[in-house]
Length: 380
Image (cartoon, rainbow, N blue to C red; front, side, top):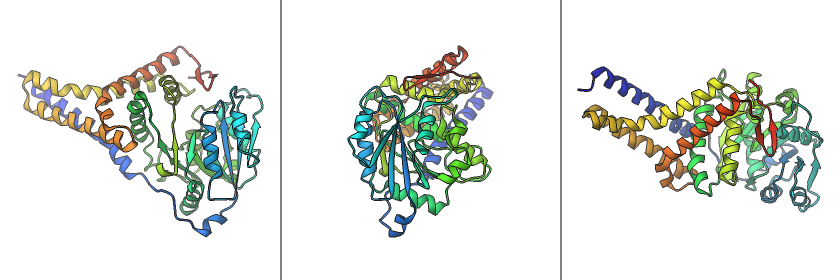
């Protein structure tokens, strides 16, 4: 007979798993959501917006991004593309959009700077608008995006306003991994919570974020986070620590992006986000254990219950299967992937465990993090 104490421990662990997994659903439900706002003449007088786009080898994506920003129904804006030493046709793509787009070449990368922060810092100092909009080179925007987010930022009295855009998923691995990535981001950053005073989490989506130049300058801008590989979140934390208002909203109808083009690029991109340059072996080991214990290990409860003929374990194990797979199916469908990919989530978690383990091994060995062809040394 299976020991009673072991049954109680397993049932308690299953309850914790359900709470942990359910938190992602709750956080997604609590997200602020909005779409394109109706035209409002009052919005058009909010001030000049300088759009800064850091671009390094972005010839495939930059054209549609520029076309989208040039089609904005908010006329009071200028666009600067900062070319970070591209070896493809990035500069030609920008030049083809005519005089409304300025393309400048960033100076040589100074020691201690991450490439994107240096490009953004360079772009800011080539503009003079009282509002700064930082836009990734692969984000295609709705014509009302700038006007809508600017009005929302003013309404919320936000010092930093950022939105989540629609993530396009094309290949097998994108459709399998990116819904899990969104869930992990929700659980890590807890976006509805950092709007409250005293919270420790903070989120800034570097794909699309808006701030006043005066606030940006007073907080040191990108220079203050020049050595941080995840510069957008580092900036949000500086704003939060200074008591400033950071706001995040889910607005997939205002922008779309395909984050990664293939499995290799996705692995390196997510490894950058998981790893950063401030490495902690304890943190990475904790991630491995959380992924295994929170997503894969619970699937063993039903087979164990059948093996030991324990009705409570069978019942709870079956419920775990329904809840965990059902949640993944719902997230996949909501984010635009075929729902059936949710049934393959154990493969996706195994991929994530490999990612975290790779980060742990590379970090212990002090292997540089590489992104956009540039290596960055890790530090403990």
